[in-house]
Every structure is written in structure tokens, then in C-alpha cells.
Length: 254
Image 1 (tube, rainbow, N blue to C red):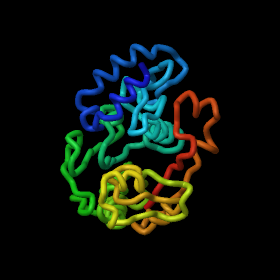
Image 2: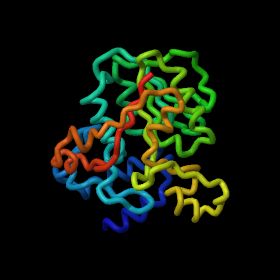
Image 3: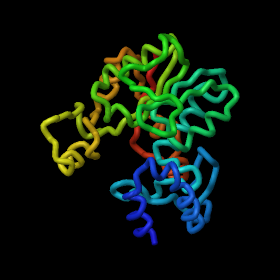
Image 4: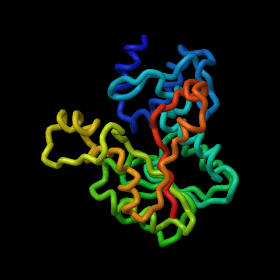
């Protein structure tokens, strides 16, 4: 059963899953009843999460809200280490994740704006290379798994920096190969299979290395590599919430 689910979900594009696939995911969740894992985003418990991803990662997708490992990590980080749930904040969410949109829109302390160039989930159509908001507009910005896709990530990060207020902060996550010291790009690789081999997806333009913080700083940010999973959470929490055990949080401040 697990192998069939994994095979099906591997080939369901994320946008399709977000639009209609959540009904199927919730149905599949009925076969995973239990309490060994818990999604901190929606508080649902299961025997395990659904497999998901091109390589069929086990215990990855929450059947109820579609949160993946990285989404559960970010939500916990926001709750435990930021003022996101307590202060009145104006928030720009680029390429908004399905599991967050309704929850963040319901939060009375947030003036919450979603934006993207393609996503039907976003309310503002926007090219991140030219953000259509004035300087110093937002307290917080989220932009996750975008910088590996854009033509000019330095321009994109500088635009996020520009629209943040002084003292504002952003979380900007990207796929990262921690075994590599530097970010890797090669425009001469055009075959989709080769691009997936080199950059983990054929639509990625680069694969960031351990220098990711330095690359974000080129946009003007003061960047903290937060070892939240390793230093702040117990092994039991990492297992219960099914978190990415080696992922760093890149906390970017203006």
C-alpha cells in the first residue's frame, strides 16, 4: 500500500495536490490512524505521515494540511523563536505554502499578503525581481524554495530587503547541499535528466552549498544560521514531528 501511495504522490505536481489533492490525502490519512507522529501546523496525529517527493520520502506529507517536513519545521520555529504569533505585523509571503495560507489569514495580529508570479494561491501577481511595494513596507517576509528557481537571486533578495522595514526579518529557505562548500550553477547543462541529477530538480537553476548565508547577505541582509533542529529540539520532538534533521533556518534581518 505504501509503495502505491508513494508512486502516485511522486507524480502529482504540487500545484495540483494543493488545489484538489488534499481530499485524496485526507482519505489516505484514514489508513494511517495513530498517534506516533503529530503535525504542529494543524495538530493532527497519525501512525505516520504519507510518503511524498520525487524519491518517495517516507513519513513526509501531513494528510490533513499537506505540510511537509520543512513546513512543520518553519511553523515550530515561528512559534518558539519569533514574535510572529504575538505582535501586530505586516507580512509578505512569496510563493505561499498551502498549509499556511488559511491559518495566517485568520490571525488577527497579521496584515497578511500573499504574492507570486505563477501560483494560483497567491492574491498578488508579482515578479520577485521587481516587488511592487514601496520601501520599508513589511515587518516580515517569507520566501521559501524560490531562490533556486529565479534568474537573479541577488536581485530577488535585495528586493525583499528593500521592502522590509528597518529591524524587519525574513525567512528564506532553499534546497541546500551541505556536503558542498559553494553554490553550484552550470547553464550549459540543459538535458532535464542531467539537470535533475546535478541540481536535484530539472527546474532548479542552482544548488546552494554551505555558503548559502553568504549568498543571502549579498542582498543586504544580516543572516543568522540557526541550528534550531540540532540545538533547540529534542530527538523525541524531531521524530514526533518528522522534521528534517539537518536543515538550518536562515533568519535574515534588515
